[in-house]
Length: 453
Image (cartoon, rainbow, N blue to C red):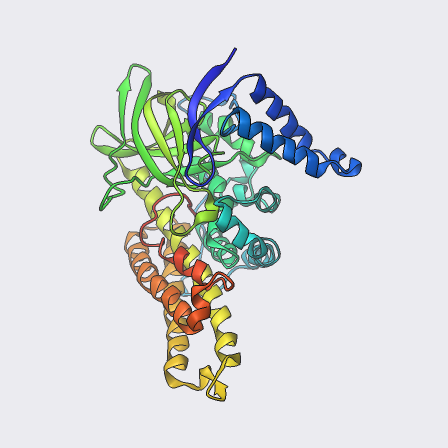
């Protein structure tokens, strides 16, 4: 007997439907065997993986996300645990604390040794390798914004630490950074605004050993999209909300088990927790120009019914607006990492590349271009850090994040363009990563949601 579930997606934009029949269960079993160390000891790795590929191809297009069931827990209607705002001296000082610097050093090592080597293939496949995601989980990235009382590592608001981590991780690759940070964005959102019941129901999964794929879903496929006026709607029907609409550029879409969805509720934007196994949820692959390694997809909501208790935070738009601002701050931080990667790559290149018998760096136009990248990058960093510092202190940071986003969107694209220009013909080919960084930096001004600090 077959049961038809919500449409899911395969790789490279091929939409499909998921079916679990005898073939589906056989593939699931073979998949479990393929993940076992036993086949390596027996020398059967290649044969097993070929069997999984062949059977999957012949039986159905994709299995889709795992059907995890989140067990309801906690007290309904009770406020959840909250971390206090960070305390900072009155002196203007953006120097990371000792703990923050230690965290940045560890994440930088991850970006250098694990993320950067996997970036090219992940970009081609439009998918983040499982080992890269697992490495981020082992470092505790999903629990960065979760209070200690709930099993996380946060002793105070984590906006500053999250900004530093996003920047360090993006130096390896923006797409893989987004994929690695997406589950933590959902965990942080629940920590910031969730009720006791929501926190007790969902956060244990993020603080355990089997972290679920999850993502924010705020962006929509609309021309001149205004994130503060979503077209996706939510209407109350009894003890439920019914959601309709489409979300775009959602990371980890095909494997995500939980989404935080933005929708219009009686004229005000609000956030809702939606499990991927809910009837009416469909996924379609949506690869873009950049950020391809994040596994972007579209989330279709067709009469999706969720309990009224899945409303996350306030319904008056205040929670939603702060979520958008924190997400924009995260994108600014990501742009810093990619921009720094460009600067670190082109500086030695122009010093070593020779034309007319001397390094091209001796040309004034080239030297000025590199200096401009460094200057703009530092301005972007100062604006972003100031916004993050105010957010961590629980102060209004709307003006600061608006300035940071404008600078990072505009100068970030210029840094990517100049990086390609400085490499000449080499900047146009995939042998060098600068062309990928240019494509990724184009996303800073258009992406909403997906990550949050």
